[in-house]
Image (tube, rainbow, N blue to C red; front, side, top):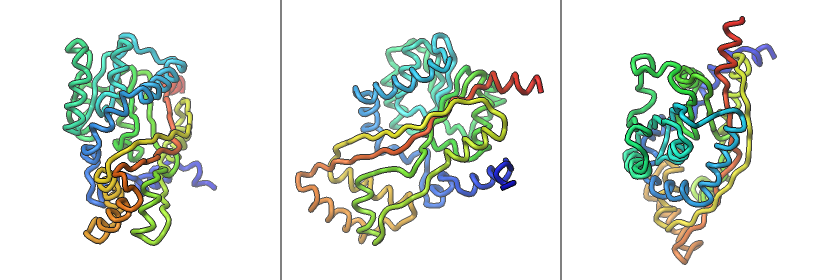
Amino acid sequence: MNNFFDAANWEKAWKDDSLLKKMKKAGVDPTRSFDHKAKTFNEQSFSEEGRKRTKRIMNWLEGQGVQFENASVLDIGAASGVFSVPFAERGAHVTAVETSPPQVELLKENISKFAEDQVKIVPEPFENIDVQTRGWNEAFDLVFVSMCPVIHNWDSVEKILQCARKFCYISMPASPPEHSLVNEIWPLVTGQPFHTKHMEMGYLLHLLYLKGYAYESLITREMKTTEVTREAALQEALTWLRNHRLPVDERNRNIIADYLEQAYPSGKVVIHEGGRFGKVLIRLQDQNMYTKED
């Protein structure tokens, strides 16, 4: 039971259980793993349903005291601007960090309506940025990291917190992902039902608690439905196999392709995906006050 309150033990456990570590071991480059879905993700993000989801999260942030007018925001893993754009629309000055070339091109298009200095794009991996040298130490009113693999252990969290002056928002999966296509094809390839453990949110929350941070947290279940071509579904299934270190060979490709042809004769594959997602807003001002008084 003593280990429950031992922060060093939790830090080590997270480092050993990191999803990013598993992705790299499987030969997946996390900075480029989303390239093939950039256009589809952009369309979903700026659809009516996507904008409603973004607005819900921003309204929650404002309800916790975050103000966007004239605020400085660091958006890490900005993608095509799903949050950078509405941040700027509410008057924030945004620094958007994004490494995927197709995402960067879409981001440039989406921010073209703003003044030149309102949204600045930094096309570099955040892991490679020296916070002190760049002048980012406590430089931003809000640091925002949504569903981005840059969060993979406590050291990465500390680097992100270092950039924040007032608030830091982090969202991560809070349960194994739900994906109808994977549930369908996984047993055909492996002979077993799909099961994975992805609970890094638990490490984050517990370490924030042990280290004395003040924060608000929220866990919701969110699902979305998309329709893709059989070829796109095949590529998505193969990416899942690769991410889980299973062979992406001719045998598995044929198994999946044959299944998709039989199960979806129209050529359109309907995918239901989502799961439980955790959101955390860390109040750095409260932490700084606590530290100084202590």
